[in-house]
Amino acid sequence: MIMLTDFMVVSAALFCIGLYMVVTKRNAIQILIGIELILNAAILNLVAFGKYDKVNNSGQLFALFAIVLAAATTAIALAIILNVYRRYKTIDPNDINKLRD
Amino acid sequence: MSLVRVLFYFLSFIAITSALYAASSKNLVRSIFVFFVTLFALAGLYVLALADFVAVTQVVIYVGGILVLILFAFMLSGKETLNVLQSQEEKLFSLKKLPALLLAGLFFIVLINVIFKADADNLQWVKDAVSFKNEITPNAVMIDNIGINLMTRYLLPFEAISILLLMALVGAAHLSRKEGKA
Image 1 (cartoon, rainbow over the protein chains, first blue to last red):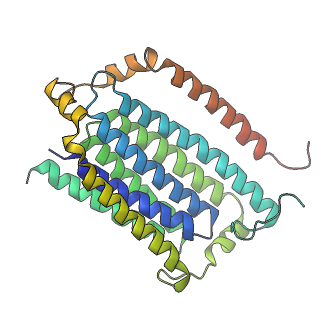
Image 2: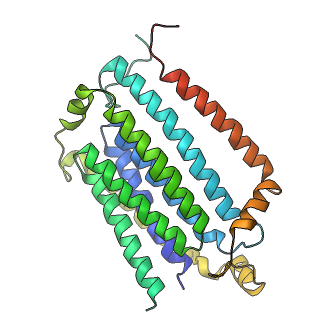
Image 3: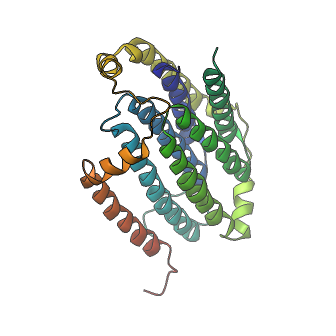
């Protein structure tokens, strides 16, 4: 059977790749993909530990909640990115340095 | 080595390599499509963790919802957006990326250390769960249990999430309307 440690190593690798994307990318959509990777690493851990809770099933249920929350986050983030593009004509986070002009 | 372990290594290899490719690709569209592959491989890993319902939800919501949303938002937003996005000159290992690589790599080393020190398979509550038969077995049907728990024990977070989804819906509609009308 697959050990918990294996899942945690995979999840740690995904988390670090997501962190790298969030830090380096100069493009808001790719940063969003990095955030999704980090969220997926967390969900993988929840699911892996949820195997040892059959009665309450809390791991899988909160994994479901996390997936739904990620969907809501993405919808809002994309709306914000489109608005930012309309106003600044760029979605590079380094160039967006004014609150309102 | 059993078939399950082979599948696990195969799927985690696909997930990690496609995530690495998405992180290193210069082309935004390619990076989005490779992210599809990562999500599918992760759904397979959820199945191997005996969470089939979460895996199906992952495919439906992430692959069917979020990624299509990203693709729509980015392909419907005009040709000039595409040109702006594609004209980035980036190399994978340039000197500018060194701090980020160091950050991610060192954080990975720290995480691996913590994981092997924590030794999650020998935790007390995990052993208790195994000995009290509170462990999900491969032939157990968990979907009824998820439904019952969702309507009894976790009703409050369920309702909270429904209100939050409504708020996100209204907020996204408000943010993405055309300017100048109101």
